[in-house]
Length: 98
Image (cartoon, rainbow, N blue to C red):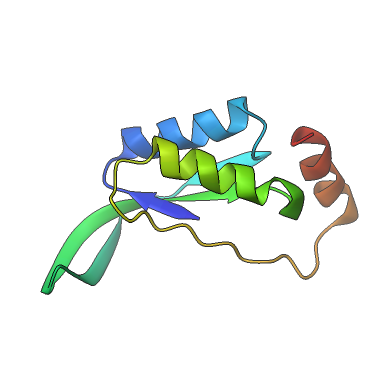
């Protein structure tokens, strides 16, 4: 998962990952309000979340893509392991990220 400050940037990150087969699917969520400390100040901003679905094997390449394509100094890049899932869906993710 990552976040960015516009819907357009979120879709660009999503499309780039899919085109490069680094993720099988990307979902862009409506704006969320983020409250965080940055450079000794508390900030509040709207961001769009991008949830990217990939395999453990492709994670490092996906992270490298996000770091290169993102315009934040310190982009949020979080991986959450899938403990269980539909076998057919997980196989589809595997196939789409080969």
